[in-house]
Image (cartoon, rainbow, N blue to C red):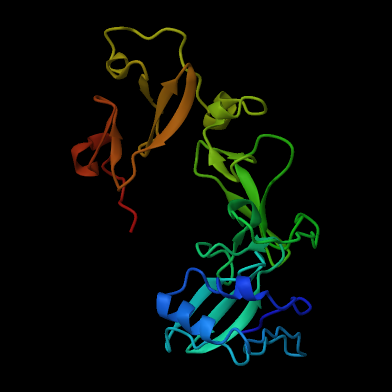
Length: 263
């Protein structure tokens, strides 16, 4: 496994060392305090791209497996224990460490990380379609049910679930009626909610969010929210019973008897 490291980080102060690996077990923190006078952090870019172990540092709390801990000062660095060996690692471009992320090598997208007092300098390493080497971006300036996920500087086209559109503010797919500044829900869903609903119809039973069937579509139904359509998937291998506008097992819906559950 290769790890790319930035130039060596300044040695943290004694006070910051007392907070070394703040999310680690108490015993590990205590061990770190015992080595305040001799702890040396080394992060070297070798020809093979491997990081050298931290010398004279506290022992890892676990001698087996892999555990990651926050660096006390740098948000784009973290400590990694691998089968008892402690190393200083650097997140890839566009990523930061929060102990929760699993985008790549224990790091998370920078916009999802709260660094607190830890510092990080984000400098884009751009390539066609990717501002940072790792990130999620819109396909373009228009409303789209696709988005681009960049990994190691290469853009991969991803698709939202049917009926959803990419929301640049949340970096995720969202209901198009929540993106009215650039999305037309009727175009995304392929359905126009009626201006009036027959009060005696099955659809009206679900007011204020009336439901409607989509001809020929066994897996979805449409719910109208404030006059805008939302495509709802039955899920769990169920299909839409148009007589009740509810999702049922396929064997109970003759018109969708051909539908097979996805494994």
